[in-house]
Image (tube, rainbow, N blue to C red):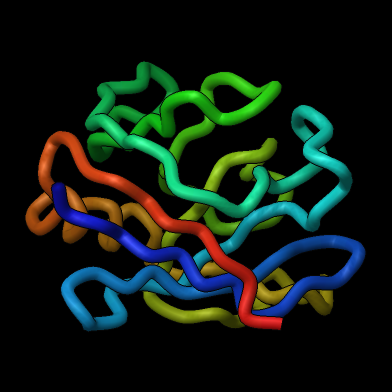
Length: 135
């Protein structure tokens, strides 16, 4: 089964930034919430390997999202489009770049809908995600 790697690069009290790697190539930057003991809607999820399936989420109709399965003590964790840490609610947002696009002194992901559409072209309907911290 194919593996998408999420390598978390930096974390602060507001957010976690990282990179998606697929077939030895960086394909996106990522934005998540910071680690807060896996609390629902305020924390990123634990590191580990999870099965992922393509999912047509009604809240994200512009591109197919991806649903992480069997996340400990969590449910409905998606990879979906969005630009700001307030858009994540525990999910993973992909983007083309990490920039402060709204002037709040936090990094945001850019072109998220377009990046999700590109992910839809290269990712299979079922794969594994390996999440690790680089710090």
